[in-house]
Amino acid sequence: MSRSATWTPAAIPSQAGRLAVVTGANSGLGFHTTLGLARAGAEVVLAVRDVNKGLAAADAVRREIPRARLSVERLDVAALDSVRAFAERWGGRSLHLLVANAGVMAVPVRQTTPDGFELQFATNFLGHFVLGALMLPYLRAASAGRLVTLSSLAHLSGRIAFGDLQAERGYQPWKAYGQSKLAMLMWALELERRSAREGWGVTALSAHPGYARTELMTTGPNLGKPVPALARRAVRWVEPLISQSAGDGALPVLRAATDPTAQAGSYWGPAGFMELTGPPEPARIAAHARDEAAARRLWDESERLAGVRWG
Image (cartoon, rainbow, N blue to C red):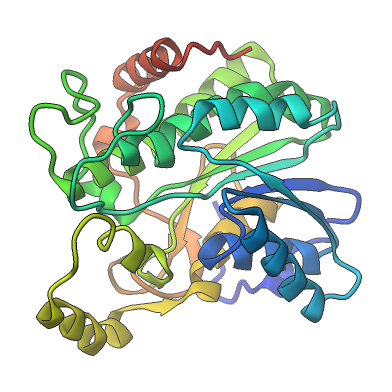
């Protein structure tokens, strides 16, 4: 993989004629990913849980890029019926890019989805896994179809608890988050291996934003119980020193999504101190994320849980 600390969105080749889906596109990394893709000429589907927020985000993009080609579709990745309904509405168009971005972080109290899955596991990983399986035919139909998953620095400490994937025997917010983000990276690596072996013709990559200032930093921890005032003040003091904007946090995602020199199965993140901030470059992949046997087991178990089959 090449290293170029000067990479900026200006390096994105024309995306004209390409169709992209970005989940969670109404805010944060998803919004800025949509903005970058639209600026390069891509047609973007904003796949969002709240359609009104999605429409507002599309309007905000058009204020900067009046000719942007955008549409808004309802998609709640935490609900498998919603994922299936999105795929059923797709209509057979070739899909050049799927960015699996939507997520929730460190929900303090264990919550479950309508399907009975732990909320972080379902939202961050399993719903996207199902979406990828259902959209695979359309990615295969496109020229150089690409799927990008959103991982996190939290994957470094994450572990896949195969004996308790839904955290039923002891829920810890950050442990569940780390597992879900490790799963996203392992999924991308395993998808690349399977695509090469099965001849699917789909390139899989992953990215992380470092420490980006997004709504994710507050909505997850605030979901279920209030955050102490002292903790909120501490974040306000420290955050500016070790974080970057949501726009900068989206750059590794945009590079993974569009850089023609990015290798299949590569992982992108900020190049600065501890990968918290900086320009997008190849990022560190933990050794346990490269465990192919564990990745196959996770894949098989995810297919079983969701009742879906790839390919």
